[in-house]
Length: 429
Image 1: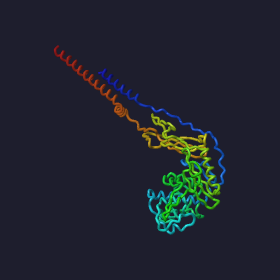
Image 2: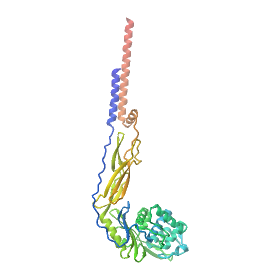
Image 3: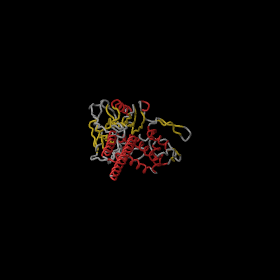
């Protein structure tokens, strides 16, 4: 029996070591050493506009600004917001027909001479607002979407509040002068950054021209008034406006090499508004690049939880814009939730990586474990699980146990036989 017990012990030891060598251990990965070269971009451009800004479209980093928080009366902002609110409220119903009221056409400034009682599609009116700056079209959309102009203006201001446009207030949908309304170059840049994320708005915003069907059967071509569509490489969005002949506005987006920039030039002289816009865009494209700060799945830190080592990763690509030749990263740190214990799931963030750029921009990235960690299991559960995962080991165990059982039974029978034989001999004596 002693030999049988020894063999049985040997079998279980073999099983235990077979399971151990099948286990994979994680290797810790150190922090990525990001650093800044502290290089300065080229000298910012000299422009005539009293208030302007240039940002990149992914994160909204400011590449240039001049009095960008100064409150001004900018009619183009009204029309952009009118277009955005209409698109969001109408969802996929842009082919709906709008009946023109007398009140909507009773307006000053630019208009398309819409006919009272006639019906126009929401989509056509949106193009009229953005390409021709038609005040009657803006009023008609406001009445149709909001029920009346006052209610629609409330929707415009609600949207401004939602987008954190703290220095923006609207009093009408068309942008006609009203001393109670105002906005800033900075707020307009945020508005455009958000709006171009809507594919319908972006399509209208990027349109150079579009035919307009008049009631007499003739056609008028609505042409975008932003001249840069025909003068500057990469232009993919534009809106213009003016307060008077000496105060012109150009809101422009352009893309080169996958980098989209947003330029806002306010109250610039007529002869300078597009020159200023070109200077800003040139400055951005010539001196900055937009690239990946952190790649999806890139380990930023490794931590140990119990006997397990896990990597903390971002679940998305994270972009940032930086001066050419400069990583632009001033500081970098990772914070991890304290006292972590299993279970830990890949779908739950357990840390944050914070990047502080040289311009003060803060980029926080949620970090997730690259593997799930379950609570520790007892030895019996581990053995059962490993045996099910490794069928070849299971078959070996069954075979060895079967042999062991046979040997034990053989020894028992042999012992019984010897005992019976001794008993028989004793009885004969």
